[in-house]
Image (cartoon, rainbow, N blue to C red; front, side):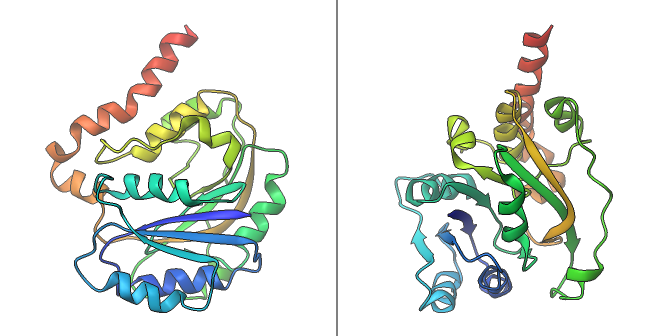
Length: 242
């Protein structure tokens, strides 16, 4: 089973597209664990109405003893999951209908599988499912170094992980404002990992909405300490490899 992990916050106007794309998956052996991070709008109720009647969805409020933030929500969701595979996802993104099917077929004995990502703005156009094109993702001889330099792209939602391969590096750090996914994946990739690549856009991510990364670029002091903390695994790896 694939466990889809989604933190949500103030997404009442966007969450339906995301959830509908999950419901439309050709691969049906999944669970979707959604954790609301204290939304100020009607996100929780809208989400609850959208998932009624489908017991593959679980919806939680973030417990008060967990710190606020998407990383904390993901960490809490992981304590509730029962799948053998982990797929992180965002509450304003869209899955290609064959997203999970193609990944589960490709992962086999690998630690993870990644696919291409395609950005979009505004309401999602399903024509992108057949027309989206992205640069070819090349296999890497040293995936850690190429990830560190950005030539091996892997955002939080890109990989489907074998749960047993990612668990040694969990939980996700909750003290970072940005790049918590880079910090997590850098630690994971610093150890030998095998992977597969699907050179097809299977995840469509919305640009222009609020995010921690956008906050960083509009106010650099907001996330500067987190930036250097997230990059620390690269420096440690370089020292150990010399």
